[in-house]
Image (cartoon, rainbow, N blue to C red; front, side, top):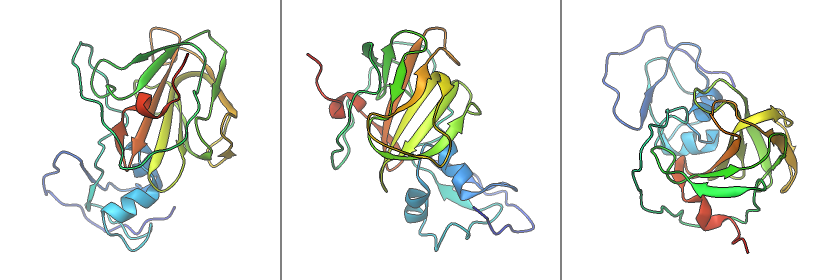
Length: 206
């Protein structure tokens, strides 16, 4: 997505949940690096369209960088819910454990076998497929609607390309250990850029 760039930046401080546009940025790039949809960024910043950002402009990114590394620890965090629900299926077979350290306390780690299928929890469009976000390994981000996104990290192989439309339950990757010291899938659900408790929305397992 093209972006109108200004000739100079600004020294205005950037606060938490904000991002200063740099030369070469696009709204799509900023959205995927902060785990949000382009539509959510346009709404939260009252932009006319995706071509209206400039170098030095401060954007509200709310959820913070999707690439933030996860410090180890036993910090507990309250379960966070979205204002509305979404119908999900489990993205992988295996033993699930809720993330115990920030910023992953709302996500779920599913331990399984290397090469086992990773499936889309709901239908949507792949808005990121790659390994450019530190600490996440081979990762996919699927945009389900204007508000919900899902994140699939540490994959062995990515089977869905950026821009692809995927169906609920479709195999989009294989489980691996990229960016991790164990074979597992890290699954995260985000609403309007903020992580919400994934276990609230996944079906109960027997």
